[in-house]
Length: 59
Image (cartoon, rainbow, N blue to C red; front, side, top):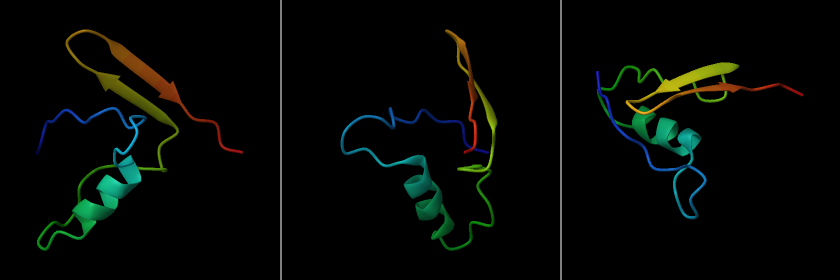
């Protein structure tokens, strides 16, 4: 289990979460990472300051 901060994905030049997911998939010995990129419709992100709920609608 890894708990980490990830930079703002909207920042110019930053990796997308899909890029991060693909990079982790390429690491030998890593069976799974638990990132549900482009799979989850509801995401809850919490830190010490706030809780953020993101709901994605599919077209």
